[in-house]
Image (cartoon, rainbow, N blue to C red):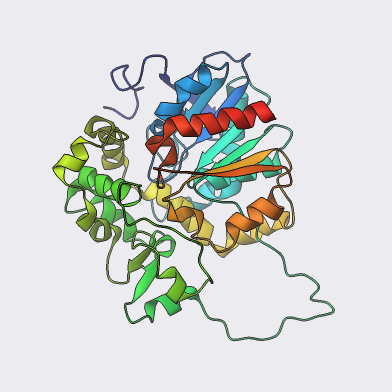
Length: 382
């Protein structure tokens, strides 16, 4: 498949169309949509890493069948969307969170909508959805976050005029992880490195098998995924997470997931991600590489963009909000206290946390019917 043409109907369920929207914040955005009517209320679905708009294929029609115009874009850096700079030394700032929010608003307006009934974000799409609702509650009437809780904007130092901060030695979690008896590193730090994309794009097992192992390892199909809250943000606690989050120090992600490729009979019985469906992902990432998505992680670790985000310190999400995650997803707990802050403070009209049995990190693909049920109940309560 070429990256400059829409998906053919053989790729998509009947009733979902693939098309391009030009001139959206410098991008030509590829979208999937169902319920093609600008007079219907809009639901905007934002994918994460390493995924595509295609990750919402099982939700688009059920949501559209209840009267919504449902749209899922390939976000900046992904899939058939073009106009982004995928060079490691290129335009990193275009991938910062506030520009990703601008991408989403530009798409909404280009489609002829002035409001969004619900913005739904999964994985790294979750902070884009959260910041969208936080910054533009006049546009986004509700927000659903999936797999990655939002603990709020980064804080600014407070009351330091009366109580100056003490000069304590600066230590980093990365040094502590590397100093463990079994030296480790955090995957988000690894994703900022120059070698991450060549490692995954050039995986010895091939991109298709790399993605099969990656998706399997983070799903409920890998039965050792038994997540729980961490007691502290410390190296020994973080090291309790599987190696897809806290990697061995000397391993790339390709080597990390390779031992976890499922057996042929497991692949054949994987109803939530068939080989044909996986090929849509593997062809896209074989064509583009992973750097477009990895730029998001680099921005998240870059002090320049953290400082920019501090402009909104203390601001809350005030539209109705809920969270959906997999009961077997470590992503719910990987950021200490984020889930609790979201439930108690970051969202002032919080409507509930739903952890779905039989789902790991890819909750909307692993258990789509349950996710649709939670979304529709949330929307009907609004």
